[in-house]
Length: 527
Image 1 (cartoon, rainbow, N blue to C red):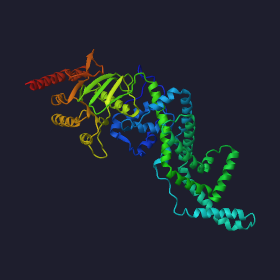
Image 2 (image 1 turned 30 degrees about the vertical axis):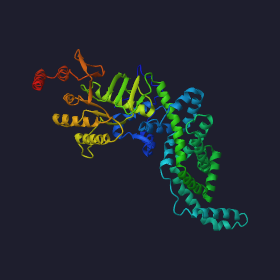
Image 3 (image 1 turned 60 degrees about the horizontal axis):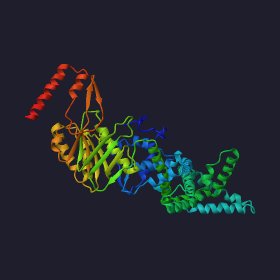
Image 4 (image 1 turned 90 degrees about the horizontal axis):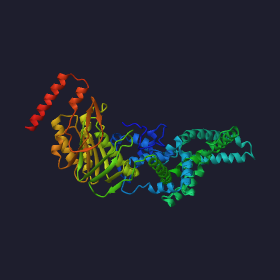
């Protein structure tokens, strides 16, 4: 797992947040959305393999909780080609720095934890009216009539006492319902007012007519929430006394209860309008975040996308979470990639580098390196697989299940990127090589691109027509392992496993025996 650190030469790390990331709430919008317009929703296995939470912590420079939720959802969903574009917003604010500053100020008003719950108004079914709701207007009208009549016939109050008691009980019963919306309702009003200000300032440019219409609809609904908003504003003693008086009037006449449920019915009908405002604010904040990310990074570029080609070109590509990343180049055409090398040499990190950058290319139009040309690709991986003790699943069986999921996706028409780390290492050598060859050939069909690492050099004998071979290597200086983390073409020819045993003071007779056995294996193979 990567940890954020201070980068040298590549980034100044400006804008990286130091506060705690609450991914349970950050992910709420993503988990609730249907993603009907997405090419692919990144599954949890792939998200874990690519350290997506750590990646998000680095990318996130948003100013509001709405923007944070929107950006997280954007990183977890690959859109159809050219359907999500942050560039117009980025360019708009880069040309209007004063507008950018005022917009950031408005967005920060939506940076309280309560803003995480606006999405509940979009996706959750709102609290229904109780079955006995029909009686509330009757009780309210009775109490109003009694109050008016008491000016002429004071004794009416005696007959109204049971009604007032029932009304008060209902009023305080409803406080629990109101409390459940104590975050969402004030934040919805704030979302509406923020959207209105950004419309007026010219910060919002995308879907202007639709956003304006939705803002007006929510503004009308917001007027019904006067009582909820009022209670949240009372602070000094005089205001609190006035608040108690208002609460008493609300209780006697059931005004708050009636208005609350009518408000919820309006909200239920306005889900799409709330979502429009949410996406509008989220788009702006995410665009500002991407702009800040690029400004703090020297070596970044915009990707170039290829149409229906099994081709990949990258130059000086690196992993953004590494403290001192080593950039690499690669060009492939109509083939996939098989990478060999010892442990810690850089194989898995390079595979993750490919996955992370192709993900960022398709989600935020940003890559870390000089150049990346690639087709639009769904992304699947099998890198970090573990036993599942709760389901009594062995490592090998867990890996088999995951590889089967990948094979199923390879039958679909959309081109995919597959990232694999040492296939079937939970089984014996012969069956591992045989099964690995069969899987790699199947995944490589059509326009799919596979990046796989292996220790089994024998695989190269079976895949020469389908895969290009690359390797990472290390050398030993003064009994120390030296890694350069540079991708090199061709098969790995030098192996240092036994030498590493020697420099770690394994018994000499043991290492001599290992050398003898290795030489015997190589001799039999040549014969």
